[in-house]
Image 1: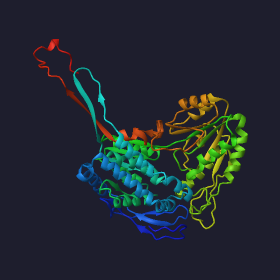
Image 2: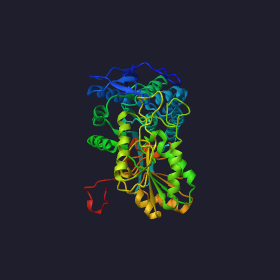
Image 3: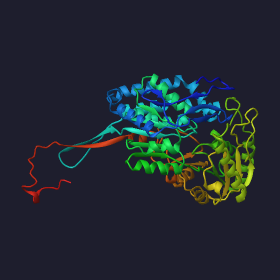
Image 4: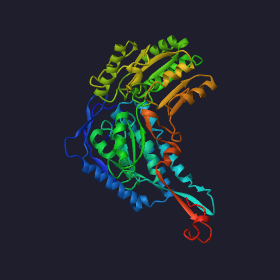
Length: 509
């Protein structure tokens, strides 16, 4: 897809699945429209994959996993190839970030900054692959006990619309570095950069079948992939209910699972922290990606002594955010992904009003000149929000945040932990001891102190409770892509006959 720097129009392309290193026809019914969320225009059409399509991709992946070209590749050769893929990604960065902006509506400045970091994920895991060691375990008696790790096999990966390439690459990099293979089902809203990356990697030398892509709706194609009997691991980023359904299906074949699900990130702002800086972090945490992130700073819990000042300054800051055309370099926030998502955000503004919260700013659709059919929402802030309100408890997934006062540290933690979710949390304080105390006590898998949205390929990423299970990134993710085999070798020459003198021998197990 050839994308100008500021596209006025674009040809509608027809895509198929990507299997065995090339695009193939798929689906037996009507094609699905892929839209530019900034204009509402159709920019591509994709198939809704059938059971036969999923089977074809899985058989291709299994053949690649067991074949010599990939399955027989030694660790050093694979690491060199993964580094080559990182170079290919980097060489195509300009076309990838423009295509991603076209497809999901994030401003070019955001998309460029995010995608430019992704080659490092491949380089990091290539390094981990080269440095990994199996264990020799001290055991009782004259025995040598060691472990062997073998790649688990096929990783089924269902990715969301909000960060199509970033969330894909968190999994894809470790899949390739460990010698596994993958079948990816991207969101039906944002499949274009996933297809493009598969093509780039095939041209860079990735063997056919290692990275297959199946397209379609989550409730059909995604469900069929998750419940396929030949998967060895399921990776899913999405809503909590989708995770329950997919996880239950994958559990029937005892597949490993990593799921990053919903979130309702609490941000605890203490009165020893600079208010202006806290407000700047609040705006960034809440409105980057139009708030469509699982770690969106959606609940600001602010100490009472600075509460009014914080709300007033957050109102002023939020009103300066420039909502507009994602391809305009001056734009600071783009649209949400769809009309359905826009209506969801506006519905939550209605819940806020109904429950008695105070609207500080936003809460309505945004008008952008020349983009009348785009899915824009004004960045929204509600204050005086109580913990039993829907906008405090439920994930909105849009440019929407709430502010709630607290009295002391214990009160802040009570409010922060009053949630079914446990993905991320953030703390704003200059008190080092307090920072560590609160980080240890808050219910979350990720905690930022005086920062937000920070991600690194070496740092484990994932949540607890309704925010999912397992970890992406780091050695935690790497190790979960292997089956571990224990090998016990007798190094003694002693005679053995259990049935000759049973009573006087040591137990065997």
